[in-house]
Image (cartoon, rainbow, N blue to C red):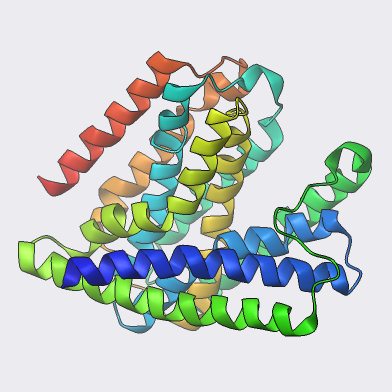
Length: 310
């Protein structure tokens, strides 16, 4: 039954995240907010809603290992799997995009979290620091995007600027309800699985929960690879990793204190940093990510998962 809870929770999270994004984007456009701003804010928050709800729910239940493992594990999955798997399908053309600025922000964000981890438990003041970083990042992104507005105006999938109010309300309410129930089922099922097989809740958070909440990003990247647009995965991963730390842990820290598990302090944080540094040649030297590199990234995640279970 615990596996059923986890599976049902994941389905509800994916459905809820998609419904919330559609409703929120259509509402924002109906209110006259430019699509550019919506893409950088509303969509970013909406697509990270599963990770946010799971981490908040776990923190409130006293499951800090799952709350923190979800974010750290998701960031590791994003680099090693969500870049590795699409590269096996189609080459990720890093040479065609300039992600140096956003990558340095991601790296600084990762280092900031590692430093704050040693001043735990993570509480409201840690959350305020992370949210201040989020505000600066969003302001910088919007400023840059407005400076290149002609090429930066995004296409918002599923957006309907003239969607009826009742339909917008239905999407938002359905999304929030699905996210709430999905997070509860996923966390409860994951905790029970951890206890039944004798592994820590932190390990479950770093693997099962992290992979589950990263499914929307994985599906997006794989579909982009099939459409020969695999290079979009690089920007998505860098942005998602930055947002996971600044927004999800920032908000969660404000709501409930989280004791940082020693395993995350001594091992997983450094794996996350090492995975981030693996991107240096692809960001600064503009080397493409082909099948060999993709296979290497996937193998690295496999080794990491084995090390966690062992």
